Length: 505
Length: 122
Image (cartoon, rainbow over all chains, first blue to last red; front, top):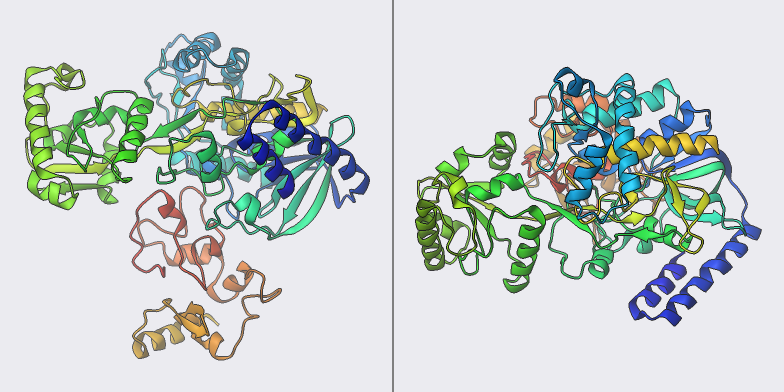
């Protein structure tokens, strides 16, 4: 596999049609040579790769539909991937809560909201299928132990309130109950530290099984774990029905990021799980999968994007503002990446006064930031500039102008809607500073699937027999930017669909 | 064994400038944790490396001496947050994800959070 990746990377880096065509040749050869040599160690109906929300749903649904000999494999020592550490806000059409509150909603409206946010660059048939499937998945999830609050969140970009949120967060409220259901009620097996290496295809390009490494010890200190890690014992698992790739995104893969997103440097942080690398995606590409939207990404901040507006965002090197704080998350994040290219990789700072802090809409995340020391409180601007190493003269000049603008209700520099701030400025002590860290936390891209969660072959444009994918591993549902609270419904809906479809195979 | 650990821990705290669990040179350049000094004194690698000495230590070895995941979680239940019972995973994070014997360690929580964990041996 290592050699194959190197070859495809070389082809990718050099570019050019001729070289790309050469890059395909080794993959075809590998297929037939693999076939002759494989000694299967074990046989399963279904292997699900990845133990996050999508994979857990797929495995449960496969077993419930008769594929009893199903296992989940997980390369990491901990289960759940990024789902375990996500809030898992679940946007659902026609939930019991919407009905109780008399809220009119439809799959078409939900899909339209997503499409609008994504600049209509999404595969709308897939988006609609996901939106429609949420209606039946919610009661299914609740029956299997998931617990949600009895309130709906009304979130930006959603035409109506439709977002449920789990009790005690996504790990405890959704993922752990589902896993308990899978392992205890269904007697399902999960194997940790088993790394998916590659697919075994037959001469027709259909999936026969996979190569894995058991006793794999993921090493977060390696530059590229997928290529450099040599731990584990190679095994070959045969599948009679199929493989479900619920392998997540690739936001932690700094090497892959540098190729796909040249403007996102290695100092741009990520709070997805440690194993969110591109290795599985590369294996799918080698097996002929069509990719979509690989260079689209989504940022998150330590505080809600809506609360950036209450203060001034400044470059510590100059003390100057560089953008309207009220822009959407992508625009702010991209401006920060740009500024950091020019200031030796120093994070800009959001600076608030007490009035700004009092106006935060999300007090829970505000208090978390204060308790954990991400946000620091200062008695004076001088102390703040000293504590955060900001140019004091520059900062004072910036705040003077900012405060005058706030009073006048008009941003003379970047056109921020100061009127909406109700004259909140940065002048009443104490003052607060928090690094504006754009966290690279979601990748909209991945392999292309159809409405049955089957992976599409790039040469034939037909489904690859025996190969399914769901969740963040897939691309194209969202387009340019993913609407908030939509990765959870994606994982739920296409996880369930993948499990049902692979069981039928 | 657990009583032995506690008495050794007490001894280490009294007799050494190292804090329990600090890294120190045990053999050549190889570092280990001071609370395991009794094993290094006896050149005892197999207690932890139950397979090959070059292979990774098994968590079963940790559990043999320190107790099960549930017991460990109960022993730190008064800490906020409880590092052994995170809402994300419960008491189901293998020891070596956070703890490391021969090299610096990093608590998994702090990939995203900034918890202090004053008793954690980095």
